[in-house]
Length: 214
Ligand SMILES: C[S@@+](CC[C@H](N)C(=O)[O-])C[C@H]1O[C@@H](n2cnc3c(N)ncnc32)[C@H](O)[C@@H]1O
Image (tube, rainbow, N blue to C red; front, side):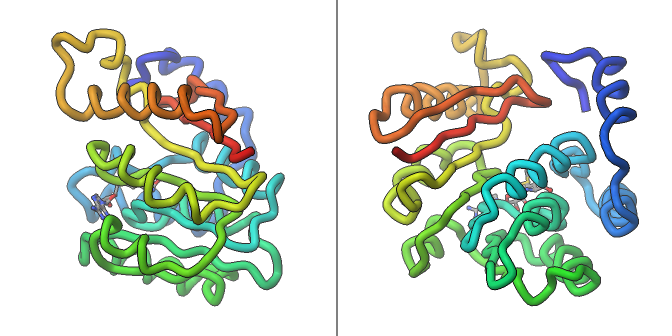
């Protein structure tokens, strides 16, 4: 993908100096490019490695992902789960979810991952878990709604990550920006003004907001 913040050369240098994707992730990355129309949605090697590392630092027991796509980020996040941990991932696209399921079954973490098919806005209120880590990576216009829906389901000291918060730099030109970039700006403003959270916006790839619930 085009990276608004880092040159392609820097991005590739970083990838080349990051531990290689394991075979399963490499294959999923390739199959996602062959079998889906918007492979650009996949987190990819660099961001996936960051998600894995964050998850390994937190060692979550309960992890929620909103927006599975073909399961790449879920497989990265699952690397940090505790022995008895569980990752719930939600997507409303049946065909993509089939690819994700296929790859979850090949993963050593298969028994820890549960994929829920449907609209995340309807599913999240039905979840009866306190999460250590939530990754928001679905439809941009609902990010603020997702925050409202998950905040009371995040443990004190737990984390909320949100992807694409810089929206390819469009957030700097709001007068001409599309609805997704405006939604990302609204999310960033809401987050930074929320006294329940400490947050940092990392200019990684398309921007990741990391928030910690106090
Ligand atoms: C950017 S992709 C997720 C990428 C994935 N996290 C990764 O890094 O590989 C966004 C996903 O959100 C899903 N999605 C969009 N709106 C949704 C909704 N309301 N409920 C559930 N899933 C949704 C889409 O079907 C799509 O697969």
